[in-house]
Length: 214
Image (cartoon, rainbow, N blue to C red; front, side):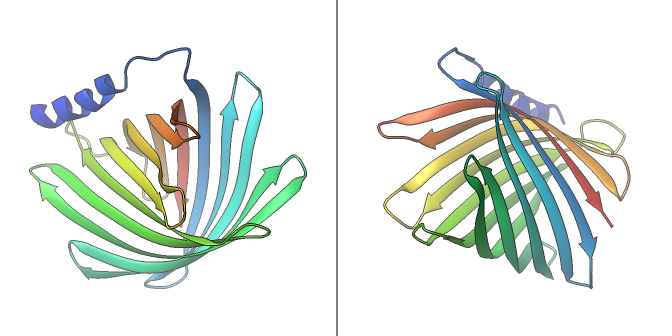
């Protein structure tokens, strides 16, 4: 068990070096998901990225209709359709996003390793449509003798099938608190890097996500 905690601690220490050059954000995502069948579900989300220095709120709402199928105990595949609205200074910007995904899971001792892969076709009015690939490699471990507290570390990468190519990466570490089968909360620290012209822009993030499943 100690080696898993060391790995997560390494992730946390590797994010150190908080500097004034980096932007700071507070992020919140709330999710309500309802099962509509054995493999289908409907989910509604609210997402708020708040930057204290400027007072800017990057607010979005979106909904998914998805189907998931367990091929076996280590492979899950599925597809989803997403409709998303972003709040802009000039009003609301809408996006449609069909998606397909495949997730691989494995146990390493008491730690669960997951490799999540998703392809999405982003359709936004007055902008060029494009395909984006998102990959997430994560590890979760229950450090104590109770199952409601789960530690995790994750790496995310985004690749655009246009001129931008690889344009975003994220490293995060935190905890999932699972109160019951209906409510779960995630607290985390994240370092996000976004491709700019020139170079990369880094953002320090503190996040709180809440999930409700029915």
